[in-house]
Image 1 (tube, one colour):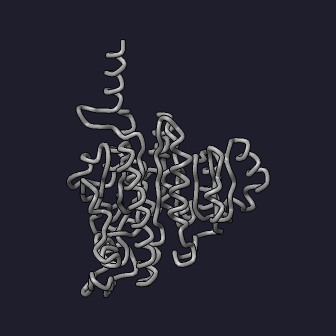
Image 2 (tube, helix red, strand yellow; image 1 turned 135 degrees about the vertical axis):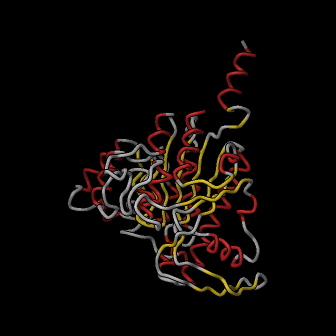
Image 3 (tube, helix red, strand yellow; image 1 turned 180 degrees about the horizontal axis):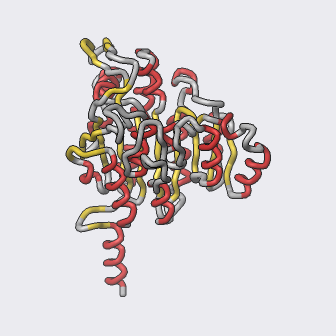
Length: 350
């Protein structure tokens, strides 16, 4: 009997000799191409946490109807596994709702969570929750969140949840009955004590890192603390949403702050994964923004000269970094829809 139990444990944690993750953390640097990563490496004076990732791939990110994608089509591809049109979110090109990774994770008794430095109704986080024909249907996205609320939601976008469509007091009472802490100030995140959390800490986007300080690290650590109480594990999406904002604006200091902030979270998540041995960490982007180049720089001083070729997105292939059980699946060159298929297989295998 003991031998049979041992074999069952082995079978549920491996697939054809490969380990299967209990937890999955997906870190998305919105607008972060290979040059944005290089800039972060220079700013951190040669310290690059991504060097500790064991497996690296490249993915194409074009939507179904163009060469250049946006965050809605890009995030839908890896959150739902289907190409769609620019601007469409969580639906296929005909507008039909798609199953997303959070839907699959919940079927396998995993907890799910979203963290973003922008509004949680923005395209990238919303691709894991909502289904709308256009990404700017923010009120509709907020309503869909309330009907399908992740276990942890941390970010901006409070005004969309407190709009005329949603009676705020009634909504918050209902969430509290479901076991949610309701938090509206970023410094209060660390005091969350219930099993679930919705922390909408800005009307729309959060301020830049110089003002939001350790928000990103506090958000990640709080989410991990709450979600890891579940014996079946969790799937957590963390977005560095303002890398994209800074690159659209071709704003060097803002970009510098955002990429360092994002790398700090990546390093902390990686440290946790190295410690527990049961967490798969994926770092990627929905697209590159700004056509960034670095003609000059200095690793000793952490200075970089930036040149932008556009204020929009580009067609660049996007690097994918993986660490932890199942990371070997992310080697090679593939399409962004394959991210969904690879992660789905790992979730369903456990």
